[in-house]
Amino acid sequence: MMALFFFLFFLFMVVYAVLINYYHSAWSQLPEFVLPEKQPSVFISVIIAARNEEQHIPTLLQSLHDQQYPKHLYEVIIIDDHSTDNTAMLLQDLHFDGLQLKALALKDYVEERSAIGSYKKKAIETGINAAAGQLIVTTDADCRFNPHWLQSIAACYEANNAKFIAAPVTFYNQSTLLSVFQTLDFLTLQGITAASVYKRFHSMCNGANLAYEKSAFYEVGGFNNIDNIASGDDMLLMHKIFKQYPSKVFYLKNRWAIVTTEPAHNWKQFFHQRIRWASKADSYDDKRIFWVLLLVYLLNVCFLAGAIASFWNATWLLMVLLLLLAKVLIEFPFVNSVAIFFGQQKLMKYFPFLQPLHIGYTITAGWLGKFGHYEWKGRRIKK
Image (cartoon, rainbow, N blue to C red; front, side, top):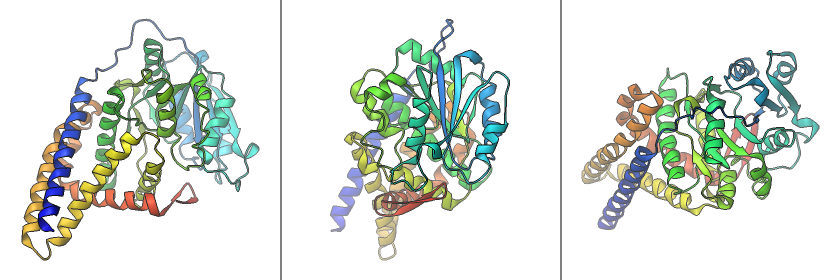
């Protein structure tokens, strides 16, 4: 039995090493997008679903107002998702010269207790139905943007005749252990996202920074057949569009395109967020990412099992420590290269020491994402 476990553990590590090397190579090959001299001219509709975001709305609107993209070429549509704070009032009272702002209330379309799977998808769909733009850009209410954010997205769209664009996301406010841990974890995910999209290896993205053609959204039926899933307004939609236009899905690797978002405030909120992300794993139509996630999960379970077994046999402890070192050496060059792009290389000194925490959270979030429940924005969602 012990020999079999050793073999499987080692096998998972070898396959994982090959996978991470593949991602690293793809990330390095992906060129940074250089904006052409020709100014883009596509009309953009920025869609934001907001629930209880009163503390973020003023900064959000200011950041959108400060975009260098011509004011007559973009609009902002914010859909209030049954907020219980002053979000709706702020959307009505705040005004910024030149900013085309539409504020919609989801309660006018869907009641709070309606039996729908995802209020966020319904809010985004409501916004798209009201949108005048040819290009839909989605983000979150707690995000901040480079002044050239929309310009870079529009330029990528026009240069590639894109149907779907995944773009970079990171965290601001890296002053606590939790925020540093989240940032490093997210850097890994962003590198994998860019690599997988570039190589058409599997579908992956983040809803805080997406763009897709409005006509493509309708052509694939929007959120139909995935609207019963609480999460997945990003990756599940992406794969629907990818199946229709496999050569027209891109990752925008450009520093101007980076969106910064707020990390979870506490460990409970963090775990609920990650459980929410993990909850859609068995709903992926793209089975390629399912096998990647399964490999990662099984490898982490092996680390936990080996650590538990080490209480009875010191050989297990030696094996776990050696393979943990191998894991760090495998991942570090890849994550470091991504950190350089995001200007967060200074955080890499913490990377080796946070490995045990990362293993524990991966196992816990993966298990509860499949069999548990989570809370998000004051709503309790069961699997």
